Image (tube, rainbow, N blue to C red; front, side, top):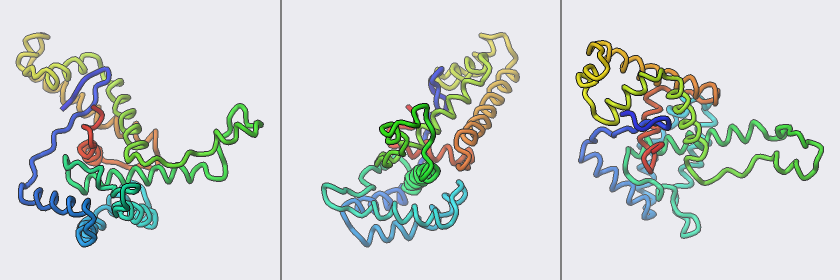
Amino acid sequence: MIANSPDWLVTLVPMPADSEQEQEESSLVERCQDGDREALSELRERNNASLRNILIARGANSSEAEEILAEVWAKCVPGGEQHPSLLEKFNGNCKVQNWLARVATNRWLDAKRQEKFRGEPPVTADAGSRTEFFYRVPATPKEDVDSTLVALLRDSLKAAFASCQPEALVLLRLVYLHDVTQREVMRMVGWSESKVSRTLSQALDHIHTETLKQLKQREPMLTLTWQDFQDLCESDPGGFLS
């Protein structure tokens, strides 16, 4: 569904999962969070191949995917109060595989951006200053699993909404935010029901296409489908882009 504008963003409602499978996965993750090494091995065995394929589909090469996943799984091992398991940040609001894919994708993007500027820091107006040099060295990657990816997705989605026609945005707000029926909208604006439906459909198609276009322009290394985008939204711990 579509949320607010001009800062309209996407709110995705997860589909109900099979309760038995959901409970099994929840139990497995809880065991991992408690430091059960066998549970973590089982979680890795279940998901590693799929996560590797997801990373490769999103732009990583085989060795990059394996390296990133090795790092992610290593961080899932509890190391006491100073180094809790990465899985402590998983809140169970989505499939654990979707969440791990988001974490891995973010870490891959951070690594590629660090690699891009390694040895050749970007030039600034004060390039001759010795002090300024330190401002040109990439910062140490943050532990925030969303730092790079969420900003990229949010900015791309905002740009897609900003490129929509004003009347389309009004209809989207009425139908998806205020639950006004298309028939009620038809009466309000004096359009046929088919025109209202067509305008909404075209607006949603435009948002899908333009969001992916913006993503590619902003981060050429990353390749996402609309389903990837939805999965990344669903895996956000606080309600993606809310």
